[in-house]
Length: 120
Image (cartoon, rainbow, N blue to C red):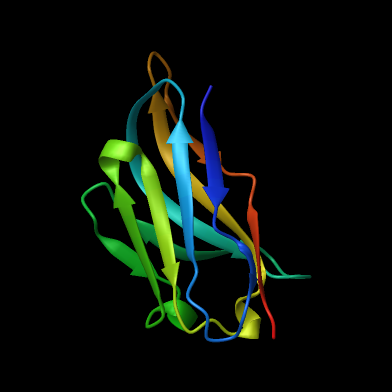
């Protein structure tokens, strides 16, 4: 069974710079794209940033100059470095990954989410 476990959320001051981590564990054979999504209060879930196995990245426009996604393929872990946080970045942040388990097809997995609240 595959699990994605996020960490690093919490209450952050405006202009703060937390880093989120998401570690995938289980009987993993391979991981393709990994991504971070977020769901602000009362809104739909949206893609924040994504990264391919080879390291190509893509960002939602409002975070492009402030957030950096990275991954450590040896550790099956994806990170989201968030800088210059604003109150509108307040959301539950979810990790997402395309994972192949041994003897099973590719499947899209989600973490349980970690709350990031930006407030003074």
